[in-house]
Length: 317
Image 1 (cartoon, rainbow, N blue to C red):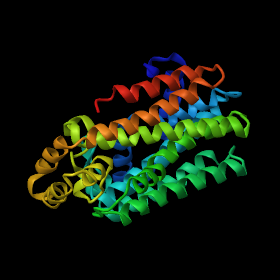
Image 2: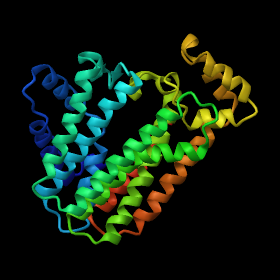
Image 3: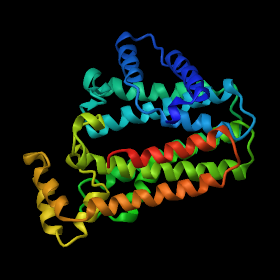
Image 4: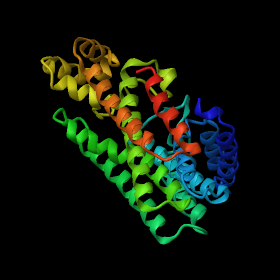
């Protein structure tokens, strides 16, 4: 497993220590929630990818780990804002920020984290890197806006879905690998190539997450099952089901989602090949990422990126 690597373990320990310092605030209730958010863990894939991107150049632990922390803080901020918009009550088994403290405080806490992220890298991030990070955040916001505009739309297309997850999820994966490489002095071509690999990993990651929403138990995905669909966010399996001969049944199941908790939708999805078709799309992104990674020069990060790619397959989807 990639997290068993001694180098990566050491660097991620530094990330956790810096993250704890960066999340400090005078407000005790907010501090408690931020500490809880950090300790709930998560996969930390984005800071890991930032570190691995840095191994393809002149690796500077101080600068790359600081950048990794900033990337993770940006991710945390987006989670807080997402949970408010989706009215998600639980994340990773714990109350979400807005559930515990209210929407207003949660919004300001998300904004506070964005400012902390930029403070984290202000001492060493040159203009181009700051532009790339700012552009990445703008793409994330665009993806979230697209998602909100498409809520409850039974005519959402495959193309719209890919554009949405490309913005809201894959961009930060791409930014993680590319910015780590950039900070380590890699040329634009290498940074861009790593960014494309990151985007492909992110696309696969989100599609698999969307499949797991229908196929896994709530405890294994860290959020309520069918939460996206209940909130009117129709993901790839639903889009494929709506394009199948079971379109009418799927529409009826969506209309009943709050009444039966997704029972009817699960039954319809089992009749269709929507899950299998979604799985095949995820595998295409995984294979693209693996192929491009194999073309990279030898570095500590190469094998570990391949391990991360393979881990996506092993997730029970």
